[in-house]
Image (cartoon, rainbow, N blue to C red; front, side):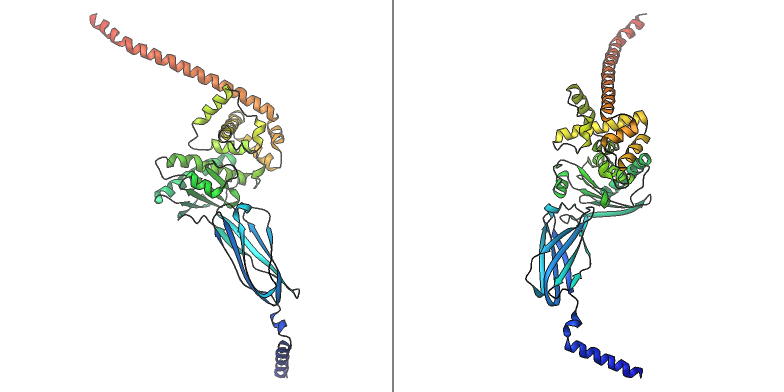
Length: 401
C-alpha cells in the first residue's frame, strides 16, 4: 500500500510540473556574482542571473570595512529572463582605504513579484600596483604581518622589531587592550604612500593608522636613514591603534592635541626640529591657541608641523606635572563622550585657556633655562680655553723654579 501511495505522489508531482513548469523554477537564480578593481580608480561589480519571468529590478549593495553605512545603488536595466550586468563604482567618491575589505551583494525582483537576495561576497582591496614582500610572526599574543616593497627580509625584520618594542612601551602607559592582529605596510617612499592614501588635504603626511583595519601604512625608503625613519613613523602610528583600543574604539572623540601629541611623544627618534619650532613661535608670538588644536590640524604644512610640536609639548607637560595616569584619565573621559573642553575640566579642574596659560608659562621658563645653560656653556668654554692657553706659561714657570 505504501508503494502505491509513493508512486501516486510521484506521478502527481510530475504531472504538476508538466502542467505548470514555472513552479519548478520559482526562484530567481544568481548564476554568478564577482568584482574586480583598478586600484585608486574604480571597482566593477558583475552579475549574471535568470528567472522564468523577466527580472525588472536590481539593487546593488556594498559596504567598506571601517565605514558604518552601506551603499545602495539601483541598477537600470531592460526587463529580461536572463541578465548580465556590469556596474563600475568610482573609488574616489567612496574614499575606500587601501587594504580594506569591500563586502557586496544584490537584491533582484522579477515581474511575477519574486524577490532574491544574493549571498554576500568579499573583495580585498589591496594595493596591487606593487609586489609585496611579507613576514609573519606572533609576539606578545599579537599576530603581526609586515609587508614591504624594497629590500630583503632584514628590512622587514627591522620594522617588526621596532614595532614590537614600541607597542610594549606604549601599552605600559595606556594599559588598555591590545589588538589581536596588526598589519604594517611599508611603501617605498612617502610619495608612493600619498598616492595610495589620497588623504583629504594631508598630502604631506608620512603615515596613516587605520585602527578599524588593524593596520598602519608608512612610507620608508630602503636607504641608510630607514632605521631612524622606522623609529619615528611606526611608533607614532601604533600609538593611534592603541588609543583606539583604550577608548573602546572611540578614537574620533579624542581631541587631536591629545591623540597626535601622545603619538609624537612615543616616537623613538623624535623630530629634532620641534623644539626649534616652538622656540621660534614663542619668540614671534605665533603659538596656536590650544582650543584650535581641538579641531583637525591645519592643512598648511608649516602650521600643521607647529600643531604637532605644540601638542607633543602639552602632553609632555601634563606627564611631568601629573604623571602618566592623567593620560589614561583623559582618554577615559573622552571615550565617555566628553567634548574637548569638558574633558580637561573634569580631569584637570581647569579649562582649556587655563591649561594653555600654564603650559605657555612652563614653555617660557624652559626657554629661559635653555638660554641660561647656553650662556653658562659659553662662559665655561671660554674659561676652558683660557686655562688651556695659560698651561704652557705655568709649565714654563715651574721649569724655571
